[in-house]
Amino acid sequence: MRIVLGILSLLWKLHIAVVFLVTAVFFYPLIVPFLFSDKGKLKSFRLFVAWSWSVRIFCFYFVKRKLKSEIPNEPYIIVANHASYLDIFLLYSIMSKQPFLFLGKSEILRYPLIKTYFKRLNIPIHRSNPIKSARSLVTAAREVKKGWSLVIFPEGGIPDFDNPKMIEFKEGAFQLAKNLKVPIVPMTFTNNHKLFSDPTQILGPARPGVSHVYIHPFISSEEIEQMTQQELKEKCFNLINEPLLKCYPHLA
Image (cartoon, rainbow, N blue to C red; front, side):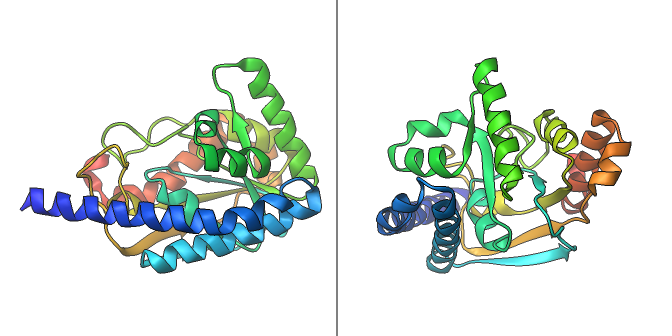
């Protein structure tokens, strides 16, 4: 039975790959011309939202907001757990009102189509190069001042073991929040790893369904200023981790 489910999951991953490729080819000529100016980038973000919705529709992915808290009326930093590549694509349609940029690992620049999108609309972090990493943070600060929000997965990637058990957060998101004096919006995805597991797990789970997301109460810039960076990191970790522990008590 497990092998049968694995084969069905593999077929579903192939379906997602086809949908992603077809929609990427469709949206590529629409998005790319807008990536070379500040005004154009905002239009490209709206096209990314449309792309996100198209993938959701053709892959039968729905979203249920298990907790939907107020969102700040100013640029903010979204911090979320990262258990599936689905997290990235769903965010565009979940948080579509405030344009945002991803801060993500530079390894994604290896993929030709994704490279153009990511390098122009988002901010790659070269973790092995301290100088380039510092430049990325300067770029992030500049974009926030222009009105963009940021998305950071503070785990630094999808956990290799016991997914969705979270691993220790890195410091970057919290350092930025304190330096830029912007709010943090913590978010939790509880079951995306079941809807679309890591593609390298050939027979890993994948299926259509409902993604459960928790948008936690935001932490204001005033609160952040009164906390140490370590306290802020721990607070965000505990907020994001709480729904996961309720769903999967064995992860405690």
